[in-house]
Length: 122
Figure 1 (cartoon, rainbow, N blue to C red):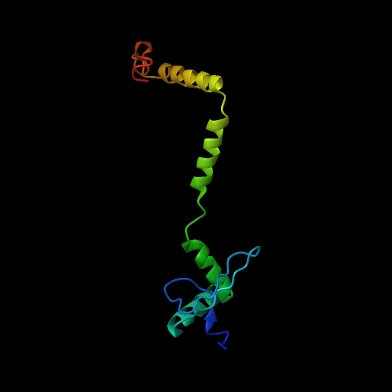
Figure 2: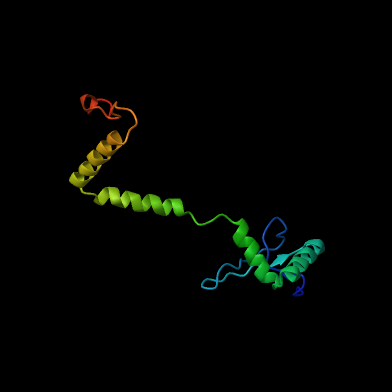
């Protein structure tokens, strides 16, 4: 059996023996790692310096260094749902309002969306 001092929850290339991973309180996974003595000492020293248990520091390090949840995919799904359930008349009115607003708020007297080019370039 591995001693508690030799078994630490950590991430990185030092994973010699990974059996599972510790993630979040609602769905816990346990990860068992065999750490080289120098890494174990560094982890313990940093945890003591921060006044944290080694496993809490390890969770903090994992959270800081792993990629965040893919929010972009959720936003794409939300926007796509708006497009699919959108009212065509309302979208047309919104587009026309936007074009008028952009043309009205220009420093130049030349319109950004000239009516003679409607259906040709925009």
